[in-house]
Image (tube, rainbow, N blue to C red; front, side):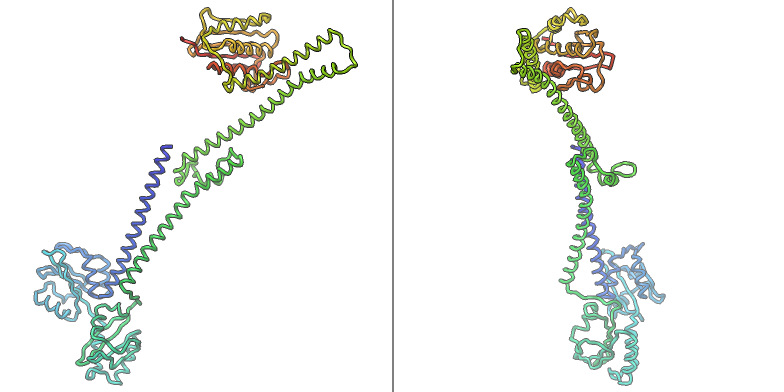
Length: 574
């Protein structure tokens, strides 16, 4: 049982560690995924500066070797952008998709001009300064051409008339904007009021002082991109939609969404683990309950059904992995079922013996009682005149039958007391030879009884009267159940195990069934119908007396080859 305790403790500890690791892994993966989503969202919110910052954050920069993730390289090419990484000396140490006209070295004035105008030639510029290593700062330059801004400039140069658009030009521009789904153009004055809107929109016709700046910085917070061109006292603002519609949330809403997603993932993971554990540990319990139900119905020889065996064992008749935790329990079920089946057979056998025992007692009591009852009716009747000799014969018969019945009852009481150890027996050191001599003298008329005992003492701790009764029963059994010329031999000696007493004969012997039940109460064997006298408890009494003296009794017998009954008693060495 210690092994299963250790294995269950180890198993559930391992399961607990596994569950913690799994939940932690899922939680970290979810947080990482949400973090990536938030980072991508931030990139889009502050595009292109957020895009460049994300590239710089994930780039490993060394003077001799710089590693940019392939995702960003593909993104730069897809967006038709170029990237340069400049060291503190103004030298470009790494570049991606850079046009040939872009220099590989920058002076201080060039860098200051780029920072001031955020342009270089025909390219718009976004910059990022990485000062993680103070002694080795790096400068990231992201170049791109804003096609939408370029388009706005072209429309301005084509349709501008003192900062406004004439009606005939507005019609042409409206047609062009209709081809670009979601585009519209606002022209505002210095107070932020929309004085002309070309295209359809539901947005207000008034801009506050910070709206344009805020929308340029965080377009995703306002629902679209804007491109701006100043024209004297007016400002042209071109609105363009996002490629994919995005939802905008407050910081508190985003935190609640993240926590809800994490909680949902953990809850879902725990539910899956609970279902898995319920199946894993519930199935063996269902098998055990089915077995207990069969035991309740008395089906001791059927531990598991064929279907349950397929569930428990694989094709190689080995226990499946998920049931190996309970292998000792399952083995105990098999052992218990075997014991219960054996007990059931033994109970049936005892029931059969009890019936036979009751039938034998009824027969043996009924026979003398019938005789006594018959003589009683004769004596009671006045039709007969009995002489003295006949009365003496009747009285003798009644006495003998009564003595037989009394002996039978006394034997029943004696064997019960011996079995329950309720009969007080006084033990002393005696010589087994004297017990044998006293007993065999009573059978001097039997010429075929032979005694072989040694000249030296055979000391044992016991009671001479009960040992003599034991030997009486063995001799009577050997004489009574064999032909008249059967030779009975009584031998005694000292062996390593103790003092050995043997009573053997060369008679008819016994079959296995009779030998097995020889010491059973009231069992007379397969030939018992030939003998009607005696209580039928002689051998059972002999066995009980031997056990009371710490002795061992054994039987060797075969049909027609005689019987040998051997008793071994502890020698009294005192």
